[in-house]
Length: 248
Image (cartoon, rainbow, N blue to C red; front, side):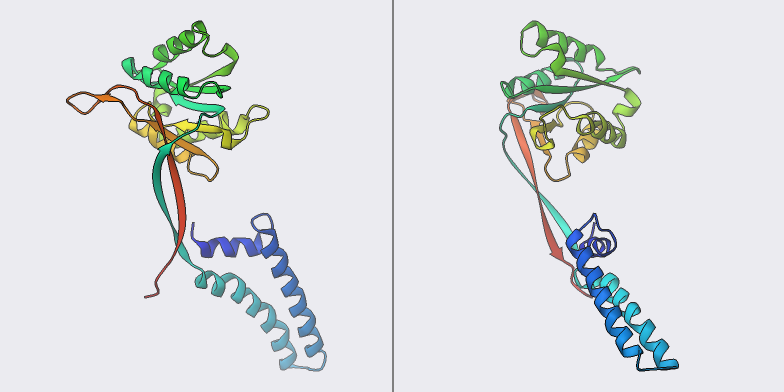
């Protein structure tokens, strides 16, 4: 979103930026009082001109001129670094050997880990349900996690491959139902597993400020460049910078 639109929204929406909203209201009140004092000494056309000119000018200045003055684009940049273990982890179950990446990632975040959201696909010709449920059984059998620490999030394969539905599922099942004592900052979304479109949806869910993204870089690859052995998770840090647009 552009800064001009944000400023315009702040003027009219008290929840967006209370200070700007209250300041705008105060200035509007002052201008109305001044206009009333001046208009009291006038009559006819001049009276109407003064009465209408002030509010119109105020609206133009606050919602149009300032918006254009501060209009700019937000540029995003990404950097990679090691990530500290988190309390919450979102993982996507892959098919076959790919499930080992999810297990490796879960083990990395121990002993801080308190909750795992295990997303997997169901139905269709290709499903990761069997791999996901086997991973859950193994984690419990090996005393890595308790049953109540693993939350299964099954999605039909069509939804699992839809970026928007994946993002919405994370919003609802993860950030919309946070365990007691856990904040969004305590959770990381691992975008390694699943299809490319699944990864896109997970990435979108992790874009808001205060959220974390990571991927698992393979420690070994085959001659095709495919990962055959999972490595350690790497955090994807996003930085946003306002860039002023040049006038043409």
